[in-house]
Length: 145
Image (cartoon, rainbow, N blue to C red; front, side, top):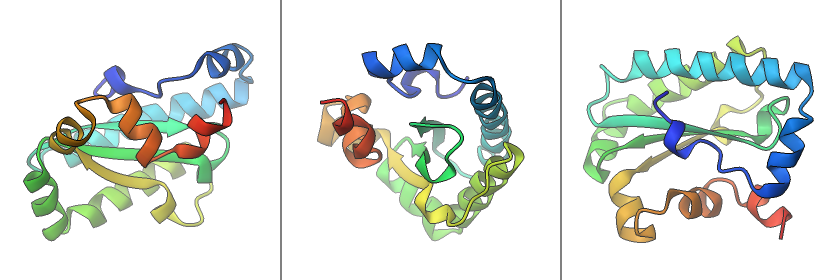
């Protein structure tokens, strides 16, 4: 998968809980991952420099708690994608993926984030786990401390 290397970074506690994940949640997660793979296939040819996406979720049945971070190689790839309407495309594709996973989305702005490899290298020494937990999903990180 195009995001396996960064996917979710579960804490110990989350890993234990995941074993007990309910079948409905597992099914939703699988549908969402498949839908996001299709979204990535659609987006990649349109947006130069788009490298992968990272889905983050504390609970795959709660759309508001599900975050999709679209990651570009460089800051300028990201900037030019956003200038050329790429942001709108990625919002639409994310909304479609959530719908395909049968998740009811009220405000897609909550779910979609953009980032770049370059920014992670410069600001977090390439540590995506730290960057994602701080930038995109602090609630999940802090709760276990």
